[in-house]
Amino acid sequence: MRRTRSPDGHLSEVVPVRGERAAQPTGAPLPAGIGESEFKIAMRQVACSVAVITSRAGSHVNGLTATAVCSVSASPPVILVCVNKGASAEAIIAESGVFAVNFLTEEQHLVARLFSTSKLSPEERFAEGRWQPQVTGAPVLDGALASFDCVVENCIASGTHNIYFGRVVAAESLDQEGLIYRDGSFRRLAPVT
Image 1 (cartoon, helix red, strand yellow):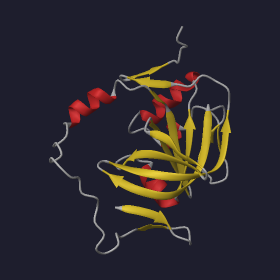
Image 2 (tube, helix red, strand yellow):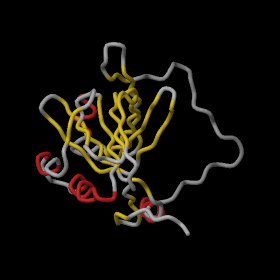
Image 3 (cartoon, one colour):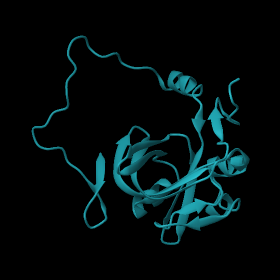
Image 4 (cartoon, one colour):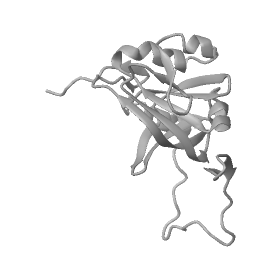
C-alpha cells in the first residue's frame, strides 16, 4: 500500500495505473533471500545515529526510538523514518500526518532508553528532557543534536514497517557529539587517530 497527502491535507491510498507493471528482471531467477535472524545479526553490526520520533494528534502524544532514519532530498527538504506498524506512536503519526525527528546527543541516552522501552506511558517517556512544539505541534526535544519538524507527504508499507516521508518545515541543530547505536548498545562517537 502507498499513501500520499492530498491537496486537502489528508493521507490517501494510491492505486497503480491500470495495466502498469513493475519492471521484471531479466536472466537468472532471483534468490529467495536470507532469513530474519541472519538479517538481524548482520544489521546489528551497522552503527547508526539514534533519534526519537515524536508525534501529536489532538491530546494524544507519543514517540519511539529509531535508527532507521535518513535524509531523502535537500530540495525540497525531505526526511524518511521507518516505523514499526505495532509501535504505539505509529497510529498517532498516521492520524495526524506529522512527526518530529530528534537526533540525540551522547548525554541524552536516557531519553533513548525511555522511548525504546515498551509499555511505558507517554507521560513516562516525556518525563526526561524539555519538549516543545514547533510548527506542526509534534514534540521537539530542547538540546537535541538536530531536530526536524515534518509533515507527512507519503507513506509506503513494507513488511512490518511503514516508511514515512516527511517534508521538513522547521529544523534546529547544535554542534555536539551524537549518540550511536551498534550491536545492541548505545555508544559514543570517537575520532579515528
